Image (tube, rainbow, N blue to C red; front, top):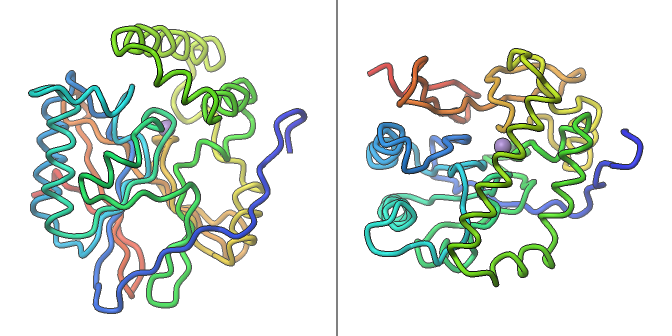
Length: 269
Ligand code: MN
């Protein structure tokens, strides 16, 4: 545990249950969609229309930034994204857990789109198997500056004050915050490859898994896809980020069936 920024102990972890007749559940995260990523947006929309999954769980950072549901003016990126979500949710259950970039996606918009909102973390009970789902940022304890920032912006007070500002001002603030966050990242991780950025704290992840009665953790956020045993019998699966606009192109889903977990390369077809 890191001084000053403790890990939130888990009590009464929120649970959802896979339908008995479901055969495949898929997880995606870290698409970081924006106006600047049209090819990734199209790949996402195509995936949601064509996947064989019975249900799709989005585990955060679907959007590069979200400054409020009222940004959905006709023809805007936000409106087009909401339209895709609504169409997807008419085909199969879609669940959304917020990430650090899109935590301002509102419950009312999700409801309007027919998307199920999930708290972070959530336990998915899939055919008797308990799978712990999280975006993952809250478990990156080594990045104390980020944890400090996170606890501030995730408070109800911050959220309400921010959303009360005019849209144009929120756009400006979001840009400034992103520039500051990129600068801080450069300072902290200056020039280091992705592999050396803060990762999920293994002990913290295992303690959450114990509290949730789960031996499997699925998370995103770190952009380092892979599967790893964190403690005997306790495995975490990290989702890939998506980027179809800039090489190296990548778009991946993690598929859960009764037989286990596999990675699906969505560009490989
Ligand atoms: Mn993230």
